[in-house]
Structures are given as structure tokens and as C-alpha cells.
Length: 354
Image (cartoon, rainbow, N blue to C red; front, side, top):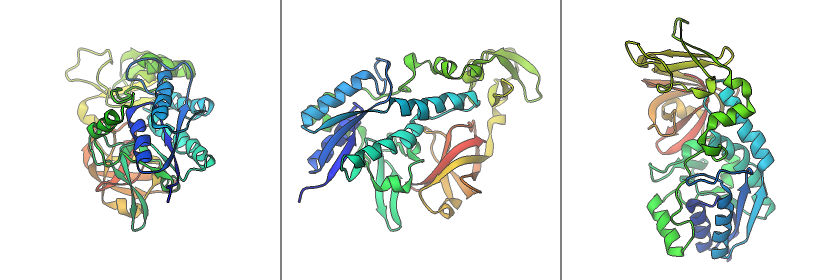
């Protein structure tokens, strides 16, 4: 019997190209879809979603002999991702736009478009694993710890997960590139995207200033007692844990950003030991498992940090409190705290304070 239709989200990179190729090899009726997220994309090596990417995705689709559509999501991407990015920095927090894009565009509107095209599922090139567990569908870390992207998918709902597929979850990057070479795909040697796709020239501060001018309001850099140590050109230039770029010298020990008060345009600095915290408050918590399972789990507070032992307690509404067994440094508001039990992602939320 012929397998059902699956829409492959094709960004123009090697991962999504191989995703489409693997599904076709498995006998699915594959339709490639590329999102046009913004105009005036930066044309530079290592950028994501640049204008060249749409052309590359189309060439891969032609090579595979599958239909390919380009969907214009520019307005909703601007409203749901770029505006949130600027607003988060203006609040003195550090955003993760890739999470918002997955949550508010890719796994929302693009999934709806896949259904409209008669597809059973939407497949992406994320390095995560979707597993049918005894209690329902589960999301697990990718088999390759170096490439694992589960941290960025914590906001995925169980309803969305039912209709999502991740063909690369059990693979390592060299294997993916080998498949691309074998098939003669033009993206086989294409470098990975590394920058925020909508930030021209890599200057995120300039992007924020255009959208939220007040975030560039000058203010004071103070110590924990409120004594002014220096001045700054806007809270958008700082994140909790930052050491470089403070413009402070002549102190007995290195100083780090401890907190940011955007309302006062004030940056509080202090010694490294003051960055350590064992308690984290979360908002907009999304659960992919019974919250009771997180009473004894491991959490990640930054995408590149390893999970650490913790206890998570669900609160009222979509809130939670995390108690770390050992202190972590530089827990930054606006970043995500994601919960794991072994390889399984239990849920996660946005950090409001550490």
C-alpha cells in the first residue's frame, strides 16, 4: 500500500533536505514547503533563512522530483517572533527567537498548512526523537548529544507532537551529510546556520533599537548597594552573567552582570559568586508529561549547558518553581529552563528570575 502524504519543512539547509529525501526513500508522498519569513534577508555565509535558501530548497525538491511550495509568513513572523524578540530585550531579558518561531509559526501555521495540503504529518530536520510511549507520544533528546535540539522544542504541545515527525533524530550530522552527498543534493556541503536569521549583519542591538527605541536609553551601572560605577548605552547590550563590555576597571575582582532593571535603565553588577542560584521561577510552562515526574529530574538552563539534577514543582496556572540540587551560575530571565527524565523531555518554561 502507498504510504500517506507528509509535508517536509524545507529551510534550504542540508538537514531539511535530507529529511525530505529520507521520507521519499521510505515511500511517503512528500511535499516540500518553505516558509518566506521576511524580506531583505542578510546574504551571508552561515545565515539562516536567507533569500538563497528558498532557491536551494527548490533545487533540492526538483532533484527529488517532489512538489515544492513557498508560503509567505512574513507578517506573522514579524508580529509573533521579531516583535517578541525586541520586547524581551526591552524588558531586560535575553530572548530565544528560535523557540518562539517553532512555537508560534512552524508548529502552528505551518502545521495547519500541512493539513490543508492533505498531509498526515509535518516533518522537520530537528535532531530530536518522537517515541510512542506507553502513555502516549513522547519527545526525547536526539541520539547525537552534540546535535540535540530538544531544548528549543520545549513549547511543543502533545497535540502538535502527534502530527510531527523527526527523521534525523537517531542520526549524527556526518551521517546526514553522507546521505546528501550520496543523493547529489546541492546542500550537501552547505554550512549550518549560526546566526539569528532576521538580524542583519549580526547586530541584534540595532534591530532592537529600531523596534523598541526606549531599550537603548542610557543608564547607570551600579553595584549591589546601588552605588554608581559607570554608565551604559542601553540595557539591550547586557545579559545576566556577562563580563565583557562593561567598561569598568580598577576593581579588586572581575565584575559580572547580576540583574537588569529595564524600567530604571539600570544594570547591577557584582562578583561571580553572586551569580549562583538554586531557585528558578518559571512562566508559560508547557508539560509533555505528568508534572509529578519532574519532582526528581534534570534541567537545562541554557541550550549549551548539560542537564543538572533538580526538583520541579508545578504552580498555579502555567507557572513552576525549580529547586536545583547544586547552584547554577548566570540564570538569565528570558531564557528557557527545560526538564528531562533520562532522554525524555518532560516540559519546560521561561525563566522569570533565578
